[in-house]
Length: 495
Ligand code: NAD
Image (cartoon, rainbow, N blue to C red):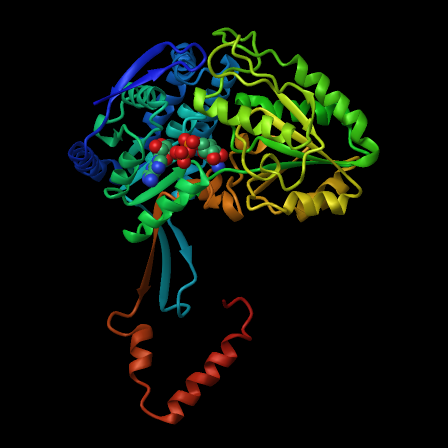
């Protein structure tokens, strides 16, 4: 059975893929495991050669990358470019640092001089990626790069709405010299995701909170490790002495990029009362200037929502907020004139802090502005959420901003920025509370695709630590050992 792919900005059919039947998922997993044997044993430099070629090819073929991403998401060309830049950045980061992160490490032995300890990182074998539609190239390909560099084969289940970008990623990897069996694609909806989990040794899931829980349960049943990169209801805090023009510009960029369909996008803003009116005026003015529509040039700022159902859901959440008393500062009108799934950049105020639009992830171009009496109130309101993915802080001085950042319950906080964390590749990125488990990027983003193996060695064959214990046959020897244990803690340099 085939899945038709349409450009949501125009409604036009742009391609199709065949749903992967369960027996083909199993066959693909078998082929991947066979190919992984040699790939996992190869030196890092050999794997790096392929990924390095892929990095360059990505840039050489940027036009087809942009066209493909846009054709199934309806997003702006600029948002498609952002995906490519992040994939290239991920590849560059792990090409530069991967060998060091993966390299064996010497650790302290159990007994100095007569034992040694070493830590190795072994690939899981077959890593499974289940990815959403909002950044279909970035999330399917960007998360596959560290998995491959760590020596795994990968099985990728892209969103059923956006399978073409992942397929292009596989083709580009193959054109860079990767054995085609090392990357398997599984097409389909939830059932295909469930099937993938039955065959892999690790699951890297990116998507919604509700699905994330199901994935965690399925992974736990098979006792395989997993990571969950889930949604957020990301707050911005603007203190009264903040640079308001810059904060307003960052908010508009950070809330409306990708039509607000970004996991780390700002959705709620807490502004200290003396700055509220001016800040609200600046933001509304900028929001009205966002150029929305469908274009394959870099002349528009914001594209379509992913499909008409999602556009209708976002529009309904705006309408419900207005019915409940919210004031519209910008946007909020249905835009059927632009295409079947467009929503205007919308700025609301007078929103009840407990209304769905202020508490649930909207995942659209909608922000609510809240007036607060103090920075403490702003922090309390920002933390009053089941989510904890990303936050943004604006203050007059960096010390004050840093103090606020330390109080925020989120996996990442951006000061003087909104979305910067995604391209800070040396930092782990992920959520606390309902926003997920585990991290991508940084050392952790590579090592999550490995199992730690500890190797301890006794220099004296047949004796060592085990020999000491088996020779304890009296209170006297046991007491001597206990005295030694006590003394041990007092010897400098011994851990
Ligand atoms: P989704 O949870 O509906 O789907 C994500 C993927 O899971 C899709 O490929 C889907 O087919 C698959 N799936 C659905 N049910 C499944 C099941 N029972 N078992 C296995 N797989 C299953 O999410 P979506 O609507 O595609 O994406 C939007 C969500 O993703 C938002 O909540 C957004 O915040 C989140 N997201 C998070 C990050 C991050 O890094 N934290 C990045 C991007 C998107």
